[in-house]
Image (cartoon, rainbow, N blue to C red; front, top):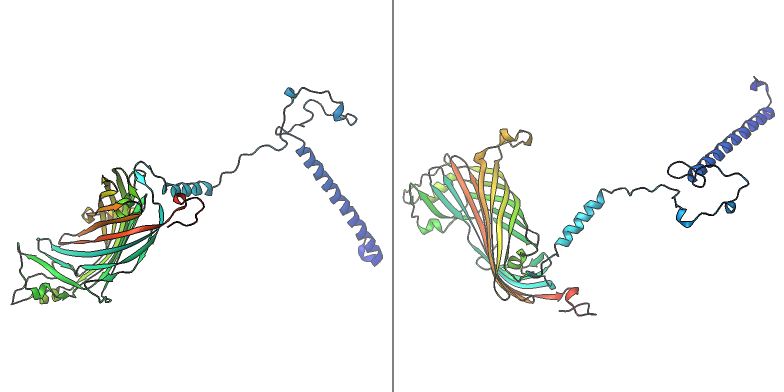
Length: 428
């Protein structure tokens, strides 16, 4: 053992250089050994044997040209790298499913449906909106409240599913903050969606039924706005059209395609709604107390405030009747089984049978009817739709019904590429 501390700096440098030299040699030998191993691996087939010598190794003096020739039929080509199956991607089936779903929007049976020939729509529409609430006790007494019927008209321009327009309210030019409503219906070949929103505190008492008879209140009561009832709710429902290749839902309700032969289709879907309603019964008693005639409703029999959520499953049927050339009469009806959960109730999925209450189940419905004339260029028609939703408890129940009636006339412009003359980038 050499004592490095007794060596001079030059001697220690010489020893370090010698160690570095041998280390470089070791690294070089390991690198050459690794190359040899990789070469042997590349020269073997999938079974681990040499591809040129199955029975005996070639000598160093033997050349490939000196080997005996073999017939071409006896030669078997073996890949030096074993074949591997392509790794399945998780996203490829998802993308294929999305592409197939998008293609289904344009898949029609042309014996039954004539596709849309144009990109844009221009139309003039008159719409009438209505709504009604019925509050009912367990004894059969009830009161009907509703806002004034609203009629609006104006122009619309559309592209595909998107319609933009400006409407003027005819029966009331002043639009205050006490009433906000929003309805939107999307009709495609595969499915339909309805969105709705209401925020209103301007209702009028339309009818009062008490002790087995309808009370005849003066016009001063029926014609005046009652501020004691406030509603705010929103929701949606969506449904799938099973026979969409032969039955065109937009042909009756969106004027984008034409039904050539009569056909129908089952419908199925789901919906959700969230409601917040409040009633001031003292104001109601004061408002309806005319000539010492008291109706007798009070907060003990009815609610003061209700907050609940509604979960619905829809099922129904739609049918288009082609009764003349370019004419279609369409109707559809769906019934929903809804579960209404109040704000104070629990509904836990892990304790479903414990929290579930059959008394919270109600039946709701959506109906549509429309008639349209459409020759692919010009169209005109009328559409009516109505929604009905229920909420029921032991001491009281309520029903909300709303809808609209539309009358329209318009034309399609801007032919799609498949229907344009060759060489034209735009055709009116």
